Image (tube, rainbow, N blue to C red; front, side, top):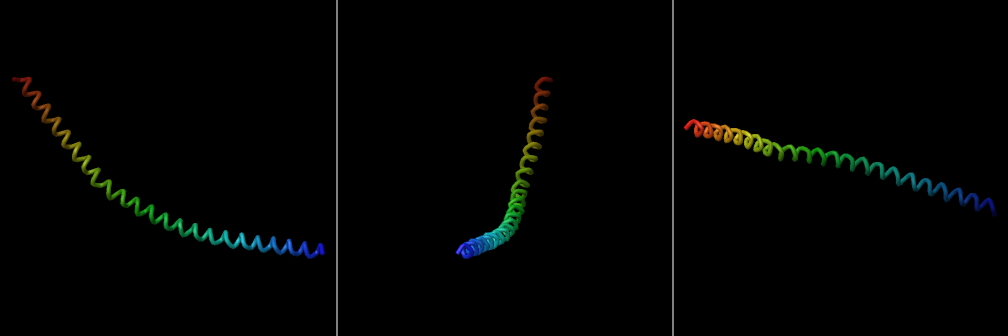
Length: 84
């Protein structure tokens, strides 16, 4: 009778071990495919950010140039007022 209990316990332990290891392999594969999807999403997102930032950087550069020209014009006006 004790032998049957030991064999039953061993059989259940092996079945549980096989079940747990079988499921963990599936999760590893899902993780890999999610990793690939996440990598592709990150790459697309990075390209989108770059495309959005290009016009903003151009606008900032244009604004800086305009501010410099306005300051130059203001300095010129101030000089002419001081001379008169």
